[in-house]
Length: 75
Image (cartoon, rainbow, N blue to C red; front, side, top):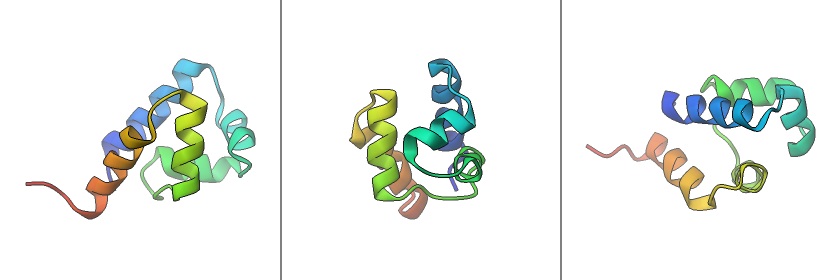
């Protein structure tokens, strides 16, 4: 898993002033899912990537590109 993606996700949440519970509510999921994403223990689904891009005002591509690297690492 990409630790950079997890760190970026956690940083974006804190910068926005959200708790994990707040973000879970916005994503219509459970706080444990947010924790797993932020610790790199779980890959986000396509829907979660879209929702995260909307919540944080970042492009879908910026999230998707990072997640793609987990599967197809560049050398």
